[in-house]
Amino acid sequence: ARRAGVRSARRSAAALPARAAMVTVTFTPADGGEAIVSEVTKASVLRDVALGEKVALYQGMNKLLNCGGIGNCGTCRVNVEQGAELLSPRTDVEQKKLKGKPETNRLACQCLVGGDDAPEGSEVRVTTAPPK
Image 1 (tube, rainbow, N blue to C red):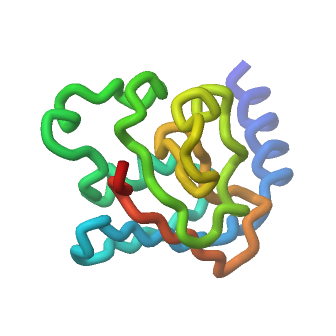
Image 2 (cartoon, rainbow, N blue to C red):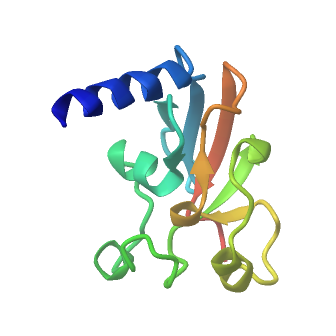
């Protein structure tokens, strides 16, 4: 049984691209603070990328009271300045939470960045905590 697992893993690995395209994600605080840059080499949830880089995605009590990335609270809202085409389309949750907000507003917990379709050297620029 173990041998069969090894074979299937080899087949799966052969189907994967030799190297995933890298996407640069730049997070800039709305207050004009220092930007934080991250490099994404596989499809990743934008919220996870931000938190992994210690980006101040949540403000005030929302640091403790956010929904943990399931889209219920809307507190991880960001404004996409560049590279919106590199993100997954808005989800139904985002459509409801961001009703009346500009199309450039996204919930970081609901969008994927990167992946096999992203052109090498692509860049996404987002501003965290956009004005209400």
